[in-house]
Length: 169
Image (cartoon, rainbow, N blue to C red; front, side, top):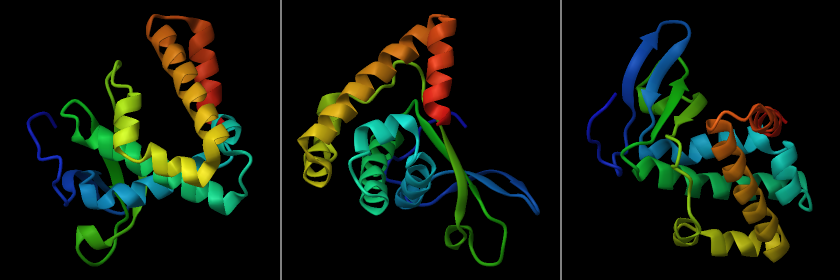
């Protein structure tokens, strides 16, 4: 799984396959939108994102979350130390035509996304969708979660518990 890769590589790379259960892949850039949609659906009702996007109805919130996750996953995918993996459903046809049913990220500590990267990848256009108060809450939440992750990495049991609760919803 280590080694150089082209950040603009479109296709998935098979890591492992388990007939009847799916295929584990390193996600190609062509799957970023699909992974972002999965993440948006998973987090649409979470406490953290309800704080940032709660003023929106469900459909606009899903679109805003999806836009944000596309930007974040695109940033992370370009980093040589980050890896995005997914499980592709079994079935007929080529791997790229089968749906992504799950995905996860392996991002080293200290791999947070900075404000400049956010601006370069669409934070300004997200502001049009969710408004300045929504962006402000999103940035507050990002800063809070970065502090929690740093504390959790340092071994704080309270930070680990709060982080787990925020992510669990």
